[in-house]
Each structure stands twice: as C-alpha cells, then as structure tokens.
Image 1 (cartoon, one colour):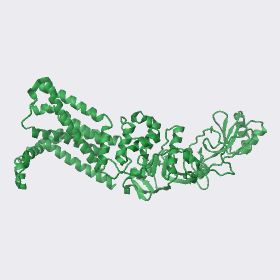
Image 2 (cartoon, one colour):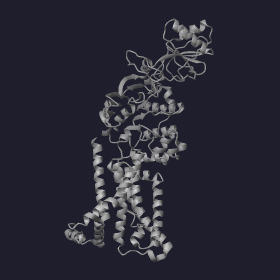
Image 3 (cartoon, helix red, strand yellow):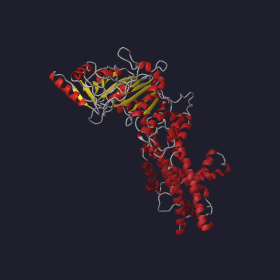
Image 4 (cartoon, helix red, strand yellow):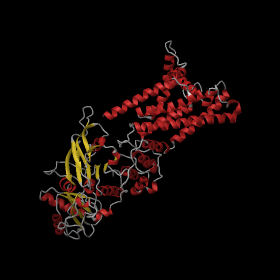
Length: 637
C-alpha cells in the first residue's frame, strides 16, 4: 500500500511549487492511475514519492518510508523515463548489471526477458531498440527484483495500441497477484479503461480521487455513437431539430459513416431517423471511447444502452461539471469503436464484473488470460560486500570502451618509446614508460586516469541506478568497488605498457636498451603508484563533479598545477628531508625488518617525497575528503 501525505515540491524563485500538498493512497491488488495534463505535476509527484527530489511531505510503502527500507529496490520497482543504459550495452548485459546491484540471482535475467518478450533481442544493443522495446526493457528492470509495488511514469507513452494493451495487462497481472501499481498518464481514456482508481492532478494540486466507474460517469462526457450510410443527412437533421427545440446538441462527423452526438439520446436520434426514413446501422450510448468490447450494434432503428463497469471502464472526451467533481477540461480524442461486443456482454439487467473480481484470479475467468509474471524469488541473497564489486565488474566489462582505451594506450606507448629511442637523450626509465619530458604524464597514466574517470562518469551519464536509493552512486561500498577495480586495471595497464615497450625496443634496437635498471624496485614502486594514483584521482573527481571530463581534468591538474606548487614548497629552506626514515622507524619499533624490508620502506619514502608523488598524495587526500563531504550532505538532505 502507498500512502502519500502532503507532498509539496520546493518552489523555484518566485514561481509556485510544481506540486502543492498532494495526498492520496494506492491500495494493494488494485491499479491506480495518476491523471493530469502536461505540466500538472505527475512526474514531480512520483519523484517526491521516491525521494529523488527535495521537498516536503512523506510517502509510506507498506508503512515505511523509502529511506527506512533496507533494500528499496525489492519493495518498489521504478520506471520514470527511458532505460538509462549505455547505448553499446546489450539487453542481457544491462539486466545482468542491475541484477548484480540489487542482489538477485543471475538466472532472474532470463526469466524476466522471457516475460517481457525480449528473448530474440537479448543480445541487441540498447541504442538500437525501438520505443516499444525500450519500454519493455524498462518494465523488465522494474520487475527484476520481484517488488511488491510498481511506480511507473507514463509507461505507455509513445506505444502502439497493441503494445499499450500488453503493458497494461502486465500491470493488471501484478495487481491480481496482490501487488500495488501506480502509473501516471495524461490520457483520460487510458486511465478510465485500465485503472481501478483515478487520481486527478491539475496545476500541482489534487482535484479528484475517484473509482474508475465514478470517474467515467462524472468527469467524462457521454455521447451517442451512430453509423449510417446517410450520416451527413442525419447529422444535418439532428442539428436543425436541436436549433428548433433550443437544445444544446453537438454533432461531430467522424471517419466513414460515423457520427458522435453529444447532448442527445438513442431514443431521440432513432425517432428522427425513423421519421425521415434514414437507415441506421449502429446506435449506441457511449461514455467517451469505451474500447472494443463496450459497443453493442443495433440494426435498423434498434437502440442499445451500454452500462459501464470497472472492468470496461470507459475513456473520455471531455468532462462535464457535476456536484461531486470540479470543472475540468480533458483533451478530447474521439476514436470510433471498431469491434462488436461478444455474445455474453452484460446488459443493464445483468451487472458486469467489478474491480474487486479482477483482483481474485479464482473468481474471474479473465484473470487467467492476463500475461504471465516472472516467478517469485523464493530465496534472496544476503547482503554482501561483494555485491558492489560484482556490479562494477559487469559495468566495466559490458562495453568496449575500456578495452579500446587500453589498446590505444599500449599502441601509443610502444610507438612513442621507439621514437624516443631513435631521437636519443632519454633516460631508460622514461624510455620504458614512454614518457617524454615535454608531456605532463605518460600514456599509461593518462589511460588509467581516463578509465577511472569513466567509472563514475558513465554512472552519471547513464544512471542505471539513479532511481534505486539502495545502490545510488554516492554509497561508499560502490566507491570502494570502483577504486579496487580501477587499481587492478591501472596495475595491469602499467605492467603491460612496460612489457610492450620492452618488446618493441628489443625488436627494433636489440638488447642494447632492454637492460634492467639497478634501482628497479623504487622505479617500479613509483611507476605503479603513478598509474594507480591517476586512476584514483579520476574516480574521485568524476564522482564529485559527476562528469568524465572533470575527472580527466583533475588527473591532468596534478602535474600541471599541483606539482609546481609542491616543488615550490619543497624548495623552501624550512623544509626537512625524509632521509633516514626507515632507520628511525626501525629504531622506534625496536625490531629488525625481515626479508630486506628496509629497502621497501626506503623506496616508499622516496616515492612520497618526490614532487609528483607528494602532489598526487595531496590531490587524492583533498579529493577523498571532498567526496566524503558531498556524500554526507546528500544523506543529510
């Protein structure tokens, strides 16, 4: 059950709030529609309910606010917009990535893909999917964790009639199994036809909260559907008689031989046609457009009356002011009904199926015809610190950006090392790293920084987890996973770069330039520290500024801006050197370092006191503190 209480968005400047004091309930086992025209505040209301936008009010999901639920994705399935996935990622890869984030078994991917009808497209890229297939994928993401509640923003927007009917069948099936469904729409016909309860917003305020049958009866405009081979003549006669009798009758000529008559009755129209000898093929009362099963045909001068029910909730043209509903205009869309009702359609003397019967599969034969849902998840995985790591590994390996970056770095570094060796006057350590003195950073460090920046930059550019408060990118567990994966990637890139450079130098110049330097230990520590530090700087900066470009700029700022400042500071007469650090530390601990540990301590100390090493450590410390500060601020909000 959803209980929204006093939802109010923060006003912008002098404008009124987009949503002002909206309160309503959505009950389990029922489909609730949030209806409103464009700009009425539907999306803002949903974002306030999901705590994705700042404002006042609170929303309870089965008695608990979202931020008090340990695993929100298991309680609420969300679809707010198009699927926010990398265009190069496959359908199966996107679902597998989200599956790892929410902690459900990977076999769930195949179950959901089969239900939403994407089996043949499981290996298609997201960038090639049509609008309808994207909606199916979004619904699959919402159903992935087997949530009790579905919150969907205009789920059928842009879909064909067939696709929209299928999607609403899925929502009806979820409600029939005891779930809660809330979706927004700007189509009154869709709301009345598919929902059990309709909540109407206008100008950010709630103006009506009604059962679907009451909504159709009080807020939609009744009409009479007429089909005749002499429709034009009949329409002119009806208009003439209405003027003579001073009655308000509106006759709308539609496609073919169909008329929609507002303000009259089947009896009056039938009598007019009889008096003038006009043949009538159809004469039926309608409340808006009731869909294909809601129209009864009448031959000759017969008339029929169709009683609406919750199951066949009619859709609408325009609302009429009544005592129990405020005046409101809803855009009119008059669509001709094209399918004759089947034998067994109820009549005024036989009450039709109700909304309650639809939520009980055993009591309503129609429930058996609803689309099948994925099987429920019997055993859920326990919380594990490896969950963010599994998500990050699938995110990093699901697209070819990382592989392409690594190959570019290796090729550039190998060619650059050969060119530097040909020019000469380049020390061997810089030659192996392919690091000219004119460049601020070697290709391997730049590549590691770029991959680190992409780790968070793609997260904000394609926010697959943005609507899931349990795994938002600001969580420290996700940060630790990204730093770990970036460290391993940078280490592999550093080792492969040196290996490729050595191989290229050996192939071109022989053994002359491939000797091992005497101080290889300290050089290796400096090289690995540089690449890993650049990767970390890219991750943290992109996480703070929410941009890949900002992350890469922070990496370049270390040698361009921070290193000169550190060198200027270290050049001062008051700065003390770190010479003898390992000996003093050994004396402090009153023990000997085993296995030559003093060498490693000394190498690490020399790395820290180097200008680049010190600048990198300083930058990482500042970025980490800034990230923690922004994380705390987001949690306080």
